[in-house]
Length: 421
Image 1 (spheres, helix red, strand yellow):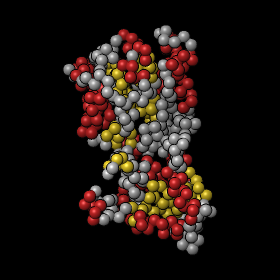
Image 2 (cartoon, helix red, strand yellow):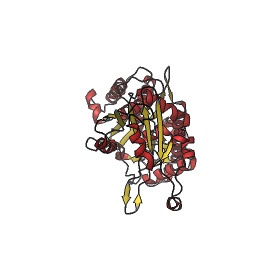
Image 3 (cartoon, helix red, strand yellow):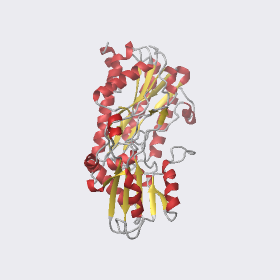
Image 4 (cartoon, helix red, strand yellow):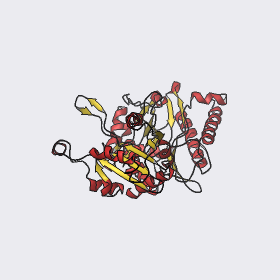
């Protein structure tokens, strides 16, 4: 991944304007309670550009008129840190992981002076003082202030002549196109997920609660080498499956129900995202099978449509129209518009370092994009919810279903469940 990080920085430099400085922060674990903290999650853009998933680091990119410079600032080890928390990453290791020369890796206490140099005509390492400051200004929610703006206020108080720009716009575009190495990481995450789902099928008929199956999944993927769940697992049986983000997973299992799983393993910060719907008792009922077959049909047809040049808007319309036609055929609805009662999400999203990965949804599909295809039907009044989701790589001439080895054929699923008892 070192070469990937180096290439990512190179491509980002090409998009930055001359006379600019970009700052990326690795972040910290948020406070939980008293002396406890939540588990640290690497800031994804920082990781993308450095291949480092450690807290309390700063990446600085300087672009002059003709030259570029990269600095990394890391936390210095102290005897107390080593004794209580373990040694921080050394400069040598940070250089190996990121590809940044060790002489350009400094301790955090020198960041301010290095930044001041970047703003100085006489001392700038790239010969041009920075006029623009790029920060990550991603808005996690409409009224939530981006972390980058907090830094912006600090820098503008000292250098009000700076123009603040959003580096997230550029990195979001770059992250849409996965390198070979990134695709391998996603494939491995999918392989872990496959083992987890096979373990679920093995224990499905012997478990009593949804959370027990979630535990089976987590146990299996952890043993397989995954860092854990890429997101909160959905294990929803019966009418719970009609709740798109149901994560309580605390309802007793009913042998007459189907159970919808939406889950994924994490591998080196890259995510899998798979949905499968299984019969709790080992065999689909007739109505359940009818609904399942419709969703599976739409899943396969939509995957075939996911090729270069296709747009998200076109793909969403294709899947929604097909679901509507099938729902009318079985008498579930009378008019096309009624499908929104039973299918109320989009057909998919980008996948990568984030489960719902960054990217531009108005850009036609191009080679190197990884996305999900996940049609569904949710009939709460019948206690039925079905979603079937696969992870797709867009290629030069079509696509590859990266999760094709995770079984979704209903007859085969029933055999797997029965064969495990």
